[in-house]
Length: 341
Ligand code: SF4
Ligand code: SF4
Image 1 (tube, rainbow, N blue to C red):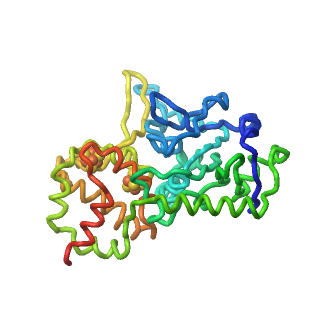
Image 2: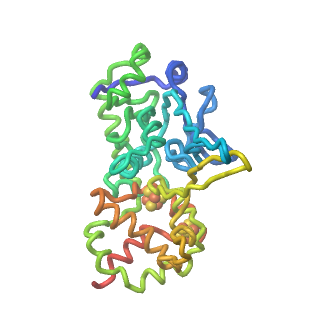
Image 3: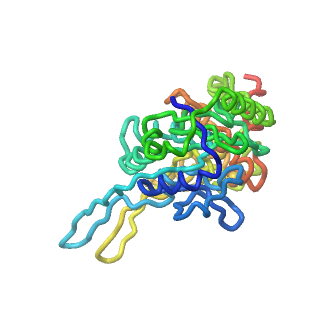
């Protein structure tokens, strides 16, 4: 790993150089919210943000994606879609969102390789930006992460005043900056100490914690407990918690057709939707909201750790911030831990 520094006034030059070889997606301000979008010019970037409203999972796992096209009738044929050749840089991704890709990767490349996700994943470089102010519902430090956690990015930038402390973590990261090395300086031990000091200060500012010790085993014992019914009573089933979650990855596949043509399209879905589990027979194994609320929690804190040895939550706090009826995943886990079993 190489550690460098970049003066802040040189960032526009760096972005311009990167844009000559990559499509750059960065946080931009849209109607008072921050979203990651492809940018043409450095001026479009907004670095004064806590985190994006929609997580950058939408870049690799698109909200709507055509899988293939087809013609119907006598001249029926299937036309595969071309994968784009372009290489992308996601600039300014927060460490928690970068971690979510490492978690979701298991689904898209473990038993079956999903070429749609993997093509984008392999051609995307993550330039992370450490948090300098946590949100009120952030709890990344409870989920083996942190505001300056560098394990899931290719490069991590940390604001240390008038410059960034730059950690190049992977060969992909090195490839991005190799033609711009003249913009950087070697990091000194005082730069390193400053980064450490700032990271520790931000960590201390995180006030929310989730205790997940023994949660997998505990959930095994309380599947039929009344807490799931109680928790689900105020849930509206809107699905915001799952659409906003960087680790949720449910999808539906639909055919959009005209008389002669069609496209098979993958779209985001949510396990909070009653139709999500309806069988062709009409039977629904999760008929009540209680079943669906319980499933969201079990999927993240029981099934996923059993399958992949990792909890499917990065502590970004989006589901807490955006739930219209204030359902709080930390409170749910606290309640589950308190049940006598
Ligand atoms: S469950 Fe909530 S806090 Fe955890 S990653 Fe998903 S949105 Fe973020
Ligand atoms: S955001 Fe809140 S109300 Fe909507 S489905 Fe999730 S828990 Fe229920």
